[in-house]
Length: 383
Image (cartoon, rainbow, N blue to C red; front, top):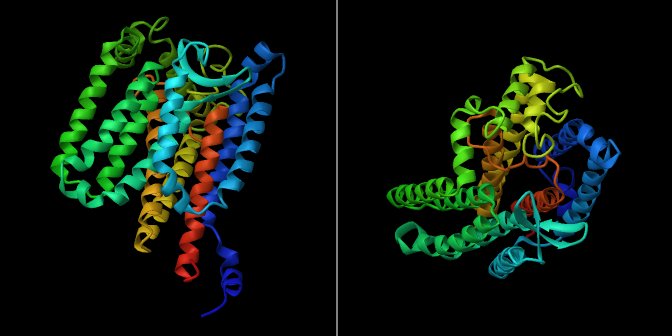
């Protein structure tokens, strides 16, 4: 058998999936450009510096790349061993966020923890840790998940606690992403169809009840169904987003020329970034963004399938979970921006402004690169 160093030299030109790397870099670069365009007006007004949000995003992106470089040197097996402990840690952090004086509130939502300018949105880390825990659980209890009701009741009890903590912030969007990602993973693990349908119906029913139980959520739901009925009240954000879509046409009105970002469309650089993309880059720009995300998700799922074929089941479920997370959040974000789904606070992964989001996303990408790297080494018989 060839030596380890010789094998590494043989695989060196193809250590990682080039299409995966291409899609990630393209999404991040395009996201920086569009986030800067969407935030330049509000940044100039609030901070007296047109590129404040760009500089801050670049700082977090740099920190994320540095953290990702460290994560890439960790074997995937470490995540499997620490999955339960990490989930307990993030649940504790979710509880601490709700304590007055510990958690920080913005726009009525207590989602941040930290001190002064150094705050972190715990719900972003929760998505990451839930995928790690679920991947390990599905490996350890795969037979039970496939054949017994208890196999999926146990993790749903834990997810119920997490969902309760998230809803107390409140963060309904993160609750939807975490819950649907976990359900998708259990389905891919081979859960019986009748069990999955029953559980899926129960979860959807519970989310529907939660959605209409709070007055502000009910208002968002009804405004989504007919935003033009109250265009200057509950339907304001969505109507402004739809105007942006209408102005964009086929090719858009041009980069940097959006009218809606000039204090008409709230959260233009975060939750409604896709609306600015639609206005400035048009239908062609929207298709490019969707194609890049589709390419990214497909490559991630191919990583997961390859890992499972190599007997690396935890790595496979981990990749599937991250792929589902990106696909669900991206789909919901586009649905919200275009009026197909109720208005929720979900950003475009790797594109929208947000320090916590970009940090966690960088770590996720690093873990995926490690999975792909270990897949290739396993195929060579040196891991």
